[in-house]
Length: 373
Image (cartoon, rainbow, N blue to C red; front, top):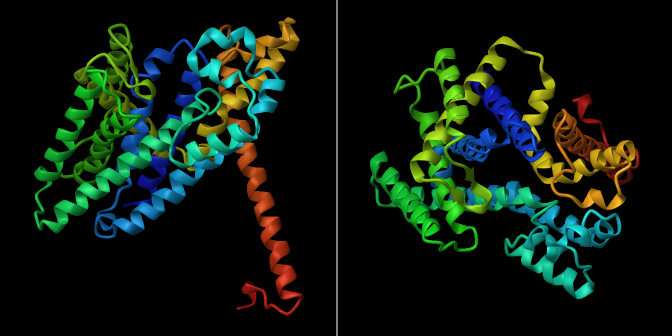
């Protein structure tokens, strides 16, 4: 796999996470974005699945625990620990308590027992904050989807059957069963979403391994066509993977492929034509921070709006934003992307300072710097 191709996928991730934030900011194009934005991330994750992972499932599962489970728990616990502060700041308040069941639950203060219960729930992949931490569902779904795919691949390998058709058939069967279960209102605590996501994950794997053989080309004309179709199709249905809502299975798959194709074209174009857009590379490599913190970042813009327009202070509790009209969705999007990156930057700086301090205390002047070798 070439470095340029890796970079194009990082840029695709950057475009994807920007679309996620834009979609959550009540933008005019939110309905179009929702047709494919989460499917894009499952596709990209599948793209990076290596066949070596199939031979070492334990190693792969450990990798996913570190890369997905740990961030999910970390962000979730932070939201739990700061929950009462969020209520004090009116991020959750009684005015909007009736807006949704999730809001009503979060509007109550946590005592020590509530805090412990919620942390235990998080450790078992239960989501406790579906508003400020609402986007974290994706980490759980991707964790389950990727592990399931790895286990299926491992079992087929052990059967000594190398035909891709068998793995594809199993994934397709799981996809259909999960979709039918969702359609019949049998949703097993997000498991349906994860298995449906596994189907898109598998498409990413296939694209990586067979796009050259199948001569799949990314063309401007096809991309324009995909964009136009997405605009048209957005008027005939809706998709929300977080709540397991799909107008129908063909609508979901079709729009996912159109959006993914368009994003891949744009990311390849940027990777080939522009070598110095480091911000996109940085965004693409730190999507988890943006995913976990962008709703919280919106609150800063809410505070600014309250100050400018003299709104009552309780308006900060409106979710996800007070109002994205008149171009404010652009400001919300910038805030939702840049502020989490700022947190990541500060975290990295503090981490380096800590390791430098720890190293200097351990060595006490006796260690030979690495660059002397």
